[in-house]
Image 1 (tube, rainbow, N blue to C red):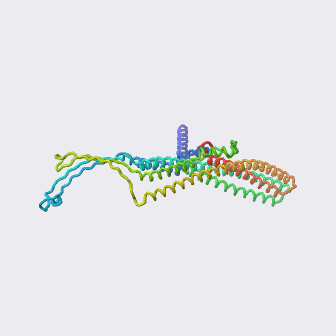
Image 2: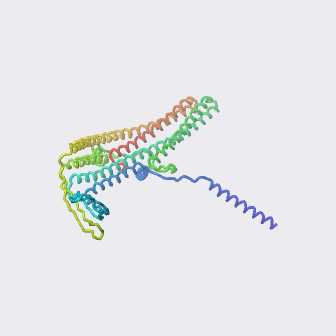
Image 3: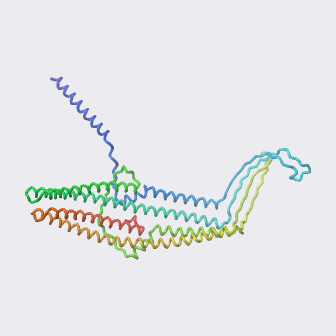
Length: 442
């Protein structure tokens, strides 16, 4: 008896061990779950600034401009060099006024020198350095502009993903509603108050809605991939959007107030004004080439026929360079830079007009989309009322389910209208914030 009990315990233990081993094997065989990330629209915009490749490229351009300014600054600093040489030469004595024409015996020469060159006064170099420093500011503002553009694109991609997500929910609701209508048609047919045509029509409508649901799910997946690409995330990260597509209060602004905010905050306008300043400094640097420049050079070293017999020598010079005539090249470059300066001034006025257009257009769109949301909500309410009345008429045999199907189609259209209106409203908020340069406050 004890033997049988012991054998049973051992058998049970073996089965438990086998079950645990199979469970471990199944867990090891199952693929790892992709990482999940809960993301609000503000988080998405900020993450894009840190991860988007285009933003990183513009940051590198800022670093490049800084190095160019460092190069221009180096032209104003001392230039120090050193050299050591050793040589053996033979001279033609006749070249030194010797009585006998011939060649001297080999003579050794050893020399080591340190030389320094310093620009003492050059208005042209000073203006070039100032222009290089201004170019750093231009590159920084261009980087900020790209940052704002990226944030706006990511915000719109986020809203598009929310729109498609809401569309998926709407299609699920449509499928659920069509299932109810199909059951109603089958119930009415069972009591002789509907025909097979009514049932078939309800089935066709249900399959159509299932098809639309599949399309919406595919669009949702594509929208999330586009959002990941805009942010710079890996496509393996599963994004969970925490914001909702809804109507939010908007602070009222007059056109003049909105334009004033845009003039103060738009980075593009600041960058263009800096470009105009850069053109002024570049023109000034070319004009200042007409002004004499002053530089100093000096060197000190030892020279001799043997290293031990070398003597110290030195040389100090101050050079005044006066430009007289270069064939008109300088005047041609001055005319070219003046043309570039006029071009930048025209671009500044064009940017100001473009900003005014964007602000006005965004404000008009925002006001219109607010009204569209109100109209779409009322349309959805009325479509549900129509559907309720059509179902009541069909349930008592006063109408076919054509009326019900038509009413259900209008409900689906009203849902889409509301989703589209909400998307347009929030997109117009992003556009207005971008037009005013206040995306970070959105």
